[in-house]
Image 1 (cartoon, helix red, strand yellow):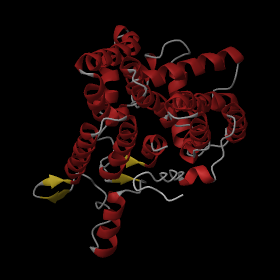
Image 2: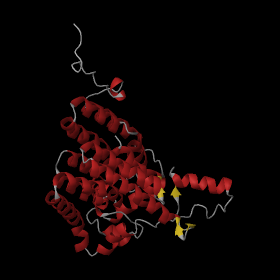
Image 3: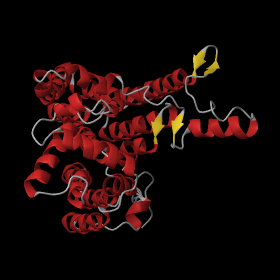
Image 4: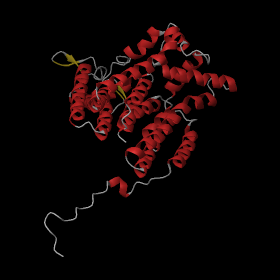
Length: 357
């Protein structure tokens, strides 16, 4: 039978490349296996300074019941309050069980919240994406998240808080993708109570919320986020450590005045050029307060580049306020932050790497 023009059967849509080979295992069985694997690596210390000089001494300073004491007794503590609550709970459990201050139990308690946050992110994504996409899609996301090497290194080996930071950031993005601005605002408020770095996705989320749902849901989401942040901070304010807590935000930048701290970004390339081609002084080549051009320091140049990237991403959201564009622009906000700004640690890649999933 001859085909009539305009009535041909449309070609079947091409399957994404990942769907041709990526399995979709049961997320609960997967997480159980990964959890056991993480526990095997808990006794190892990836970088001893953070665990031995920061987390464990800060935890002991709380005495197991007063997180605000960490600000009073440890001038080197520069983390927001939610992390200090966790450190206080760890100390309370250690004292209850009778573990040594620098023993294996203390090390396990330090890493366990970050490992739990790593694996919880896989479940959060699974439940959210099975409604947004499909069961298979959600399982594949859970697989990639649970097997994420940046999260494994950060949580199980290093014991850092970036895995903990990513969880509420992920929740904020997924909740907004599902059309729930107020819960998204609560999640973002919790993320900001872990680390200020969560602020890099705020512009994209705010514009998407306002463009997609209107100004009233936007204001409600902002109010919910601020209320969450205030509720977490209130015991510290009542204890008289508001000024110290504020410094965890205001002094987050400028602590290390370097173009890069072990991070492969544009400034590591600039360092290579300045050292190998321009033969500049190795002692000062990595300083971000050096003048780059026109009186601007490298720090200012990095901020300007990051600002330009955010403006571009906001224009993308403005033109197409869809859930997938939101996800991409939130991820790229994290990437632009680490790629373009100065004073970046290598672990600052973790939120961008995870949101890219």
